[in-house]
Each structure stands twice: as structure tokens, then as C-alpha cells.
Length: 219
Ligand code: ADP
Ligand code: MG
Image (cartoon, rainbow, N blue to C red; front, side, top):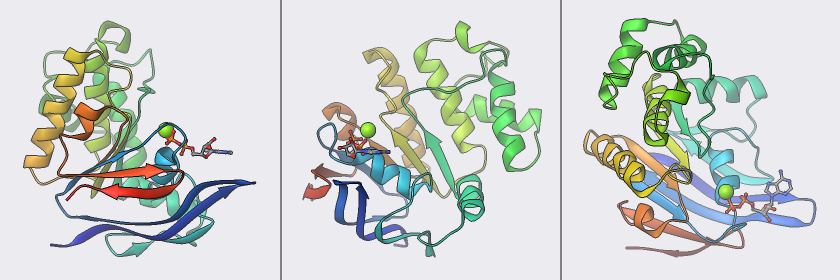
């Protein structure tokens, strides 16, 4: 099976702090990986480097064979736009745009806004009946599903999520997890950072970080 993400000897220092210390990790196409570990263990730093929002101090990140280390800011922006889908704990939606328009906005940055396609993306995440709702009129789980539709609109090679259920109650967490399950079944490659064991355990494999190092791998 093809390797979609390959992280080799990756380190990141912020002044005296070693946020990541020689991390090796690989993810195969279609795999669902959880990254777990205590607060401050380097999970977000790892995800931010993999999506090109932050740069490594040392080591290599290859996504679908493409090396990120050494890319310019513009090249990283293009990589993010074309190859990754990002989901965060915060929803970062524009409050005065409805669900469809929020998805179209992200589509616009990738290629061309297309309302039909945006509606289809929302339908895919089970929100076909909420297309014209403003974020404030959606539940937390529904807002996060809009964010997932937004992350999928560029047909990413890799879906990256940082604490995607961190702001959700159990019921809404359940709907988001069902959706991840469905995407996984459809062959999407997923890397999900979480400190929630029930979210982590849904994955094929869990990597535990501690003090910026890989502490253990399940399987
Ligand atoms: P996690 O997501 O596992 O909670 P982070 O990756 O956010 O951990 O942080 C790892 C370590 O790096 C922490 O000690 C944190 O304080 C530090 N850190 C993260 N980002 C920065 C930054 N931009 N500047 C300085 N220190 C940072
Ligand atoms: Mg974090």
C-alpha cells in the first residue's frame, strides 16, 4: 500500500523547548491514525508541520512523495490548498455566511466557487437540510460537519484533524465520529490528534507522543 505521509527524524525547537524530538512516523493510504499524548507533548506541532503551517527545525516530511522541508511559504500554501483537508477544534466559520456559503468560500480559495458542488459536499456530511443556516443556528456537531465538508471540498489526499471533538458533547462527538468512520470506509487517509481515548481508539492505529518523542505505537 502506498505511503501517504512519511515523517523522518522530525524535530522542532522553540528556543529552549524541544516540541518534537526526532519523530519517525508513516501513514499508509487509506489508514486512520490517531495521535495521542498529554498536553504539551507536541501533537499540534506535529500536525501543523505536516500541513505546512509551521516549519521543521530538522528532519523530513513527505506527503505522497513530496518533500515539504525547504518549500517556500507560497509553495506550502499551494500544497495545503491542493493536498490537505484541515479540521480544528475551533470551527473558524464566517458568522454572517450560511453553511453553503462557508463551504463556497473555501472552494473559492482552491478553484472556483460552485454552489451545487458545495451543496453536494454538505449533503455528503448529512447536512442537506441545513444548507441555508447560519453557524449560530447550527449545533456544535453540525458546525463541525460543515467544517468537514469544507475540508473535503478540494478532494484532499490527506485529512488532518486537531482535537476535532474537543468542543463537542458526547452526542455531537458521535455524529462526527460516524462521519470519520464513513470517510475511512470510502478510503480517505485520516490523521486525528486527540486526547480523548474513545476518539483515539476508533482509529486503525494509535501513536502516543510524550515530550516530543514517539512513546509507543499500537500494533
Ligand atoms: P500538544 O498539542 O500536544 O498539547 P503542542 O504541540 O501545542 O502540544 O506543544 C508542544 C510544546 O511546544 C509545548 O511545550 C508548547 O508550549 C511548545 N510550543 C508550541 N508552539 C509553540 C510556539 N509557537 N512557540 C513556543 N513554544 C511553542
Ligand atoms: Mg494541541
